[in-house]
Length: 293
Image (cartoon, rainbow, N blue to C red):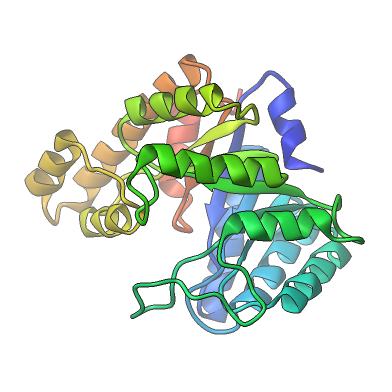
């Protein structure tokens, strides 16, 4: 089922993001977490590229397992990192053979230790080029719905909000169907982002990305990576609770519940949860929002 159809029902579309674990044991734990979250009836889940090993093969295996055995609609992340055009075409074929109909099309991050993204030989420098390539493919051009990333606070490599929005518009005009935003903690950043996007002529769904605060150092790391600001309320909680993991988890869940309630009340088309492969916090937030009903 195509992802775009979930945003045409008049009800919030809820999705969860996971990453391929590094070990067989971790992979089995992931499937258990996904199976638990299936009870919540999410619209779909997405699976990222892993950080190590044969990441494309890991992603393909995990999305195939989730969609065809566990039975949840799944979107596979696909990045430009280390792939030529022919390799991308081969991946599209494998996804189609596995009956995967949705792709999250991203440029991807530079390899660890590098500060500048370098395209592979005969590869792509930008996500917009990847989107355009998929859409123009003679076999797979209409085989997938395409999700692209949006940055309410600007891309970490482009802090000029106007320029960053221009880049997003190119991705949309190239054939994207849905925008999932990077994580943010201040809803005003999302609302302003949507307003700017609509004024720029972007009409596709813009879905807020939510990462619950479950561990202080981890949230600081991810915020640095994606250029998201951490509000004073969260910083004070991290400092106050320190190593008291249960208290920071409780704070993070409560903060995310407030954040999500406001987003849905103000018309967000859904919520995309960055789960970090943990189902506990996501399940509690989901339940408190009344979404299972």
